Length: 464
View 1 (cartoon, rainbow, N blue to C red):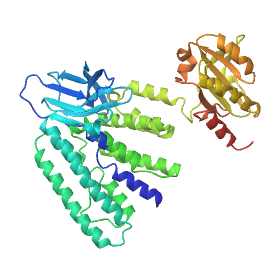
View 2 (cartoon, rainbow, N blue to C red):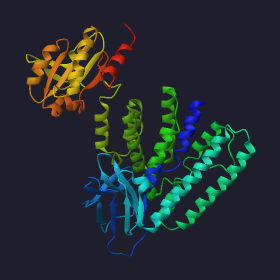
View 3 (spheres, helix red, strand yellow):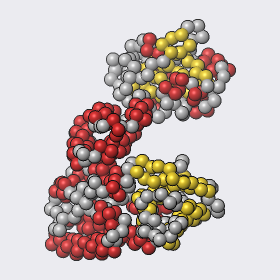
């Protein structure tokens, strides 16, 4: 029951756009102006110096224009061939700082706090944007009230009063939705206002399980998978991601995997005849599972769906990049490499051991490494079956030659050119120390964050 209520709470938070992203969506109407401008002011200006404008195309973003910020202000002349749709204004690449908007060929002026764009965004010019922002605030408030009443009802002692309040809240929400639907009729925002609503039963639901079932059954009721404006936005993608990741959860690994697969099959059955949309959604979901290091589902989506798309819908860069990002994930066989001992050229796969292998990437220029590596060496002496292969990423031999004298229990490998070294590139190493634990067959079984986590994992393995 605890798991079920957690799922319900998750559902309540997923019925619209994530609120911080919702509030930053800008919608524009047709304009008779020959030169359309996008103007903005970041308050406070901070140290941001550039803004980049992208057009959202499915789950991707395509570059349109960029300009400098001067005292936090910018102005962009929209290209004449700029098509209507969702666009993204990025001001902080390192921290994913952006606001999304729908361009509909009319001037727009906005102001926001770059540290909190969602809650601070204000439209100076663009009535439709003001209306859409107002819709998001009003419908979210109404929906939260209705959801709260439904959730409270499950443990309510006075169900009749709860039912009465629910009917009032339901009526208010329906009126709000209808009001904004009328206001947005004939505009770009009409598609978004329709698609962002959540199905709500006209009468309160008796049990938590029934509520969850109802939410899943009606999750895509307001989504038109063939609407090009919706496809080229973030709404459809987020809706699918929420359905796959958040409405299908179990504490049991095998059940969880089965739920993921079932949800994805249901989604892709809805878009059988849309290979490009399938490709976009597959890419998004595969990268999500890459981040989770859920290799079985990455492989499942790649082999059962992505590679079966028409060749025109497949992106070789996506295929290669996912292969690159997953080759050192837990469950994969660690990539093989050759290394020079100073006397002979040896092969990593030729290293034999009766127990686990710790492959650690470190550097003598890394102060944290200089604290942990000696401790790892001491730990390895207490565990004779453990084999440590230490790859030192260095600019020169001096530090390595000095420190390796105290690491005689390791297989010490010098990798010059640091991050550019072929071994470092093979394993996508960009930080040190970086630990991988392998079994005797060179299969990656863990990627501990630090020495404490590493020793805890090894100490927890069954004794041989």
